[in-house]
Length: 169
Length: 173
Image (cartoon, rainbow over all chains, first blue to last red; front, side, top):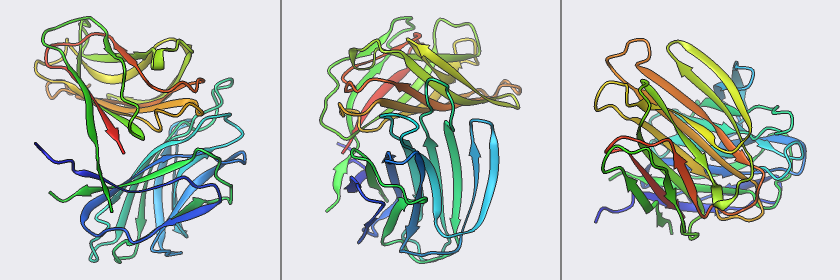
């Protein structure tokens, strides 16, 4: 019987503006973060800092409503998907974030996030999908993640972040 | 201590070409997220590319909304479907494409058992075919939504498919 290669490391249901996942096991190849979040403000963006590092981030992104393409440099965190709020009643984000080679202390860290931001159905407005590739120019193995809202919004009840590890073999 | 997860919940494999719907009922409500992996070659179609049609989420007929990005043959655009009863999930291979090629897709229902959130399923799917230089690769990436808090206890995938096409449901802890 094949063994599962996907382990749940932590599940967090935040109700403030940020949280941390610490003591991440260094025994996996990659990490996967599933996001199902909502804020009590109009909207926000998920921001993530490995090891609490506050500089050295850059990224490139595509937003699929309006076909916006852009870049970011000298950022203070991985800025990932949009989080719906009062603009989209009762809807939550749906993101997958891949954190590659997180335990390797010889490489800069890369992240790929794909985000779905539910629009306001009545007007079908708002960003609907976003891809973002991010780079952290730091080789330290990732042992913790600090995750929060980039604009200071408070997470709404029901928000869930699930962190998984993908086994090496 | 990490918890072992990614558990297979159900699989449907077409034994022969069929236009029948694939219905998953009584989906176990024992996990946090629902991941769906698809290998699909639509039938009957006659076209090189095909679709799946998602409906009847949790037994409700609440209208669906769908927004997506798609790329095909050098083109790239976005579009929407509003107040629909069946959400288009694409692109996959159709039975008019080169033999043996199937499309692949991954879908995710976050927090699928919740009865306090509107339901969202995101999808990404690709059609592959090496013989067609114009439409060798096509893809779709988007989000299907429903203004209903009903838990995802059942799903219907319509469109029909060729033998060997399959849909597998996994639960994530």
